Image (tube, rainbow, N blue to C red; front, side, top):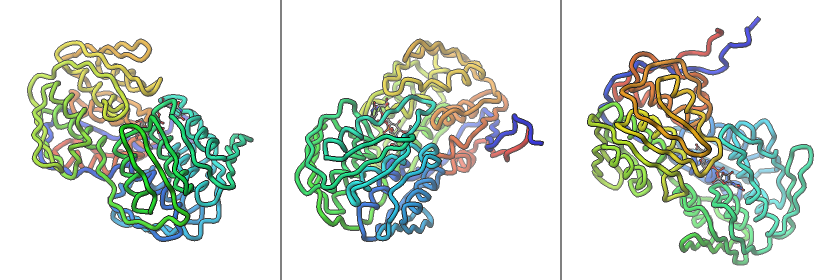
Length: 428
Ligand code: EPZ
């Protein structure tokens, strides 16, 4: 009889205290790959996408596309998608629960087939994460929306041109709207759009498909076409993985060279790292070097939409602030519950006090290894960083969260000198 505390997922074992040294290649962006994979649904022609990371989330996206009837091949980061025979327009609850970015099928399915049925994404551990803005754009474009038995049923005869100002800056909301309006041959205007590099990478793809997209500040003009073309595209590097590796190099007092980054996407993170005392050398637009070893200075961080400081780097910088020489303030403005990593870091000796959306972090001399639990993707990355610098041994559990968004992270860290290995699932 399996007892109730058996771990359903693997864990990472880390022995802290090793300085990371060497060079590492950053993988393709998860948050650019997902919308671009869904965009392939727009066309009857085959599309080829390169630099797609091998993750739980991209595997889920392949599974979802196949369940809709697309034919996919994936090998060494390259995906070939033939969506010509898509004949199903339903994203089931089991898939949406696993990956809420599954909602990104709504835009392309409505644009090409005029219908989509998607399980209403539940909340997740970092917040409610509603999709009201996505639905408002569809409604403005003439779609009928009915929510029944936990599913959103959308239908549209002919997409009408839309003029809409997002009430909230939303990354996937902007992406869904852009793909939806690719199916309208008249010109639409979207205001207050998200400008994340991942959104801009999708815009590049839509342009390759024949969609007209002009962007000025936070306003986009879109004019779709009747038959979108297949595309070839190489996905941008993952700026959050890059930022995570930079914090690791700095905190361990190491010297790490990152290759295949997009320095222009990393402004706010590089500035904050330098403020904390890191030595960051931009070697080219595609590579940079980060060194640590000195005192970690306290920071004041306030997460914001791009180009502001990314919420997806908040947990990683909280670990950095936990070891700073002074008191730091971290304000999480994007999600209402993205401090799940605090309790786990406190178990490692961090001195953090949270009130509402602000965490006050009083730096301590060192963190101590412990058994800690991942709660969400970026929290688990933060716990790995903490394990790398803590005194003694750390076991980070439930790392399926980590595997959703980091490609071979422990192999990359081990190659840089970390003592880290994956422990198999075990019955306690
Ligand atoms: C994207 O999520 C990313 N995911 C997230 O990365 C990232 O944290 C987030 O953007 C913010 O940058 C992908 O791109 C797949 P939002 P998304 O819509 O699009 C509210 C990771 O770690 N909102 O920009 O879901 C919402 O509740 C993941 O890789 C509405 O109120 O985020 C949130 O508070 C985690 N109504 C805020 O806006 C809506 O219709 C920003 O959400 C949509 C959003």
